Length: 112
Image 1: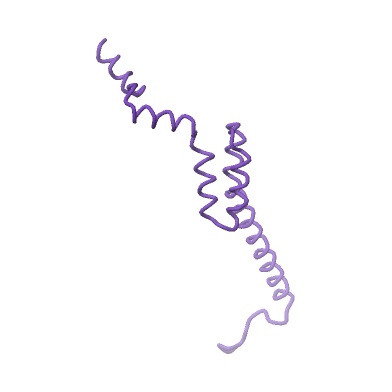
Image 2 (image 1 turned 135 degrees about the vertical axis):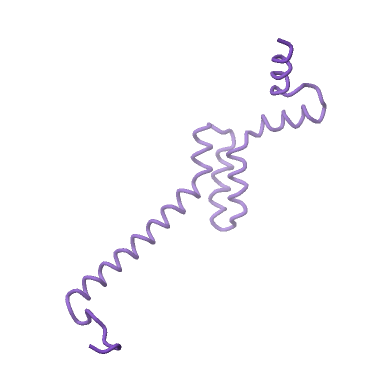
């Protein structure tokens, strides 16, 4: 056998290896596609479990995110951040009306 000869050429093993390589290729492409789809649908699933008020917006942004990926990032932010609670915290910080909850708990423990 020379260095230029190819093992398994024109044998049944060659055919089996080619079929196996094709199956592995198709399975890999399918797994990558399914994984991409699951990650891409993450904001919709999070919004539906939290019963988010803006689920329609999140769904639309997720679908638009297939074309413009930065829009998908907005969908993730909207799905994971509770907008009402965040706005209340920003308002409280801006006005300085209330002490945050964590600070009041530490004051109560120091007084005891």
